[in-house]
Length: 388
Image 1 (cartoon, helix red, strand yellow):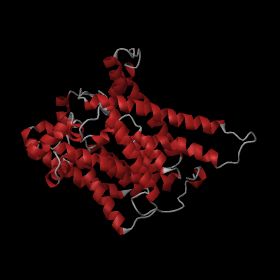
Image 2: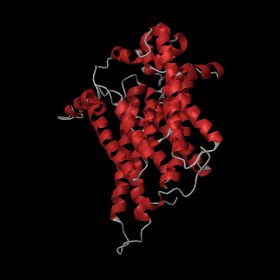
Image 3: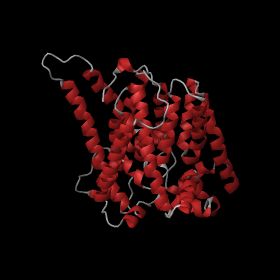
Image 4: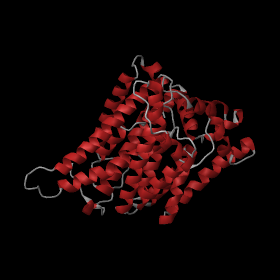
């Protein structure tokens, strides 16, 4: 698949459909199937139904309570917007699936949908192979949540769709309406969607459509507790200490050294979760934001910065690697663009490009390291341990 380098950043064509090209879609489906089989093997395999139910851990039980009991049963549940719980519960009533089974189906379908949108967007706006970016995303440390009944992948599908339309050179009336619908839904799936309000700086007035969905969530909080902002006050009930982004940064960085020995399994895994991986991701995302700004992709650059600041605005970075799942595929773009630029230039006299080899090796190393982390923490999570 051919590249367009930096000189091809100007959009040569405006793709109208949300789906990737048929060849890309089949590649995405094939990679997803292989990835699921790999995760199935490393998490113990066995009968399908118990294996699927095994992904219903931690927050999944809180989504189940929201569906079965509503916020009134436990005001602490207002920490979670209800959209994913409502959708999973409704699907479980329509299909012969448990709540967890329905939630996992939604997450896996959302992965394919998000990947298709992502592939179309990066091909259109950056000229890089969308399937390569999707492969990079599959190897992310927290991508195994695409098998869990969590809201993260549904959020990815909605956010990538919003990005696709917000970065398009022009929209039809029907596309405008779809964009508005997606923005209305975002805050009811994850509050991080409100980060897109930063795009008002770029005169993306459509992002004001985030406010009605947010208003519904505030109304639900007020109806349940008498406080529209109870979802903020309740964070302490989930063992989240008070603090802001700098407190979280200080805590994560202070724990980097000394690293515990690999033989000390639990301390080493905790060090990876709470210190090493969050700090490494933050560095890579900062570099990616700078590259996007340099390339004048303001929508993605501002979105990335706003989402990082919002999702990291905690005194304890327990789950930020999972929150970064929605941003992780963007990290591949600078490397793939670099490779594309070099491939489009005449061959060097020696006929060999060491810079291309180094860039490809860096991309491969990131993918391999991310996949190893993913497989390790997927096994931990499926057994009931904490995994981001």
